[in-house]
Length: 91
Image (tube, helix red, strand yellow):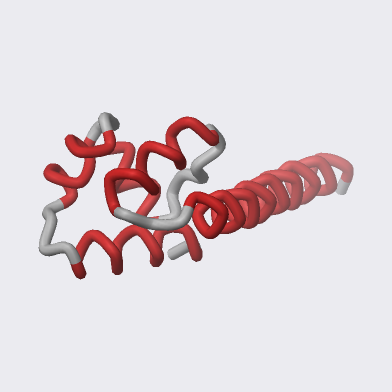
């Protein structure tokens, strides 16, 4: 789970909200919130992160920082996979 996902899940649970309820409050899909919380997807849109911050009563700067770190981790993982696949083609 990513830092962003942990923050979102913990705050949602503190508020006693289901994923569906929190997603509805933020104006995003339940499946997207599930992906964010699990770390399967990074929150790349500041607008989406702002919606979540507002819905969950979180500081935007904290979520944006966590979102940027999650995006960097995701990009690094993707680059490593591409590199590994490319090097396996050479062998």
